[in-house]
Amino acid sequence: MGLTNAQLRDHLDTVAGDDPVVAAALERCGYPEERIRPTGYKTLLRTIVGQQVSVAAATSMWNKLEAELGEDFTPTCLLERDFDTLRACGLSRQKQGYARSLCELVASGEVRFDGLPADDEEAIAELTKIKGIGRWSAEIYLLFAEGRQDIWPAGDLAVQEAVGRLLDLAARPSEKETRSLGDRWRPHRGAMAIFTWHTYNNAAL
Image (cartoon, rainbow, N blue to C red; front, side):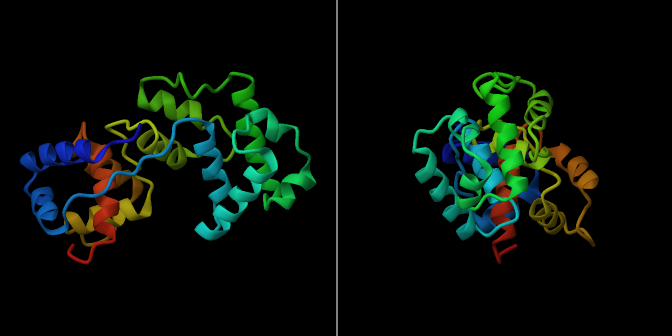
């Protein structure tokens, strides 16, 4: 399960105790809300469905897919459908390729969501075996579904922008710079990532 509101508050209070910049930002912006997703392959399948489309379009596609496959569908259910059936649900050729890659790896037992490595980098390497799942998608899964405490999605533009504002930098830091800047918040970078998204949308910062 993802980080709960109580865990987020606890972790951010710990960080703020050592970092006056974060303490001041917490004072101005308040605590973020938890972002929890179910564990399992369906959460990553939804990520694939939602890539490069609006939230409304992604929801529409997902609803059509569930109507076609059944609410409790398994990876095999998707693999049994042909191109045109999935196309009718809104899945492009590329999305179908990614979805099939995910379902094949899960069906064969090569990727097991109930047994991902405890080491974060190893778990990211496991998830990025899936076609169409890059580092960012893997990190988001580990943070929102598994609640891993030290995940730091430094490639996220909103995280970069918020870190730049938080630390009063002249320009938005690069992914490499953001990764390095986040080191000060170990081992609670997961809570800080969620806090940066919260502050990114907050006019107080």
